[in-house]
Image 1 (cartoon, rainbow, N blue to C red):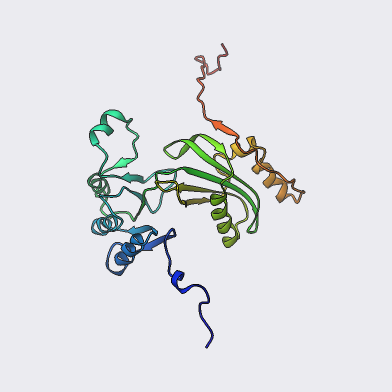
Image 2 (tube, rainbow, N blue to C red; image 1 turned 135 degrees about the vertical axis):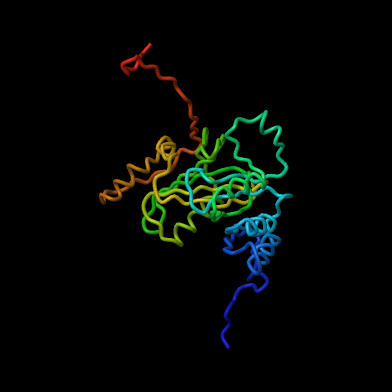
Length: 266
């Protein structure tokens, strides 16, 4: 009788360090699976709808002992996402932080969601407070042509205010595996976050487009929009290596105008 699995049987169901999305994970078998996965080192994201299911989901992932993230299943641009943390002082949030804080308590979350007759579907996932990376690609039907990774040095509400272009083999390996598995084509980008100890990077988003920070790739010597156009036109592409260590910092400049709307230079 032929073997169905020829690898190490002790590792066949090893889920440590892996990611799992569990739909209906807030009750019954789904909840049991979510708890089991989380207990064995798997990063779990649960999709649920309704207050009782949401409560079960956050409990299964370790709240209130552990901080979590909650996100609307449909949303963009950091809308509908908050950090659920029972150990954050509401007094400190009020007096020490500006009113754009991403933290929220479970009670505040429920009050907010209850303003609608039907609670929207929510995703509950592990809170990843580690280093943030963005990786931009130009690929040809699953084969990377150019790859540029950027490490966030200062991140404010998902916007990298300062970053450095660096070469992180672990991050590039994960992204490249996804690119080849999905046979991604053209310009696109990944967002990743490390866990608390900066041990393991997790893919949190894949953007099928040029990303907002692609200008830093051009500054590092790899102009991905230009190279993408050359590829579409069938023109030869040069061999390029990013200038690792290139840094970017965002600065704001005041602009002054007269009553007619003409810019003043002074």
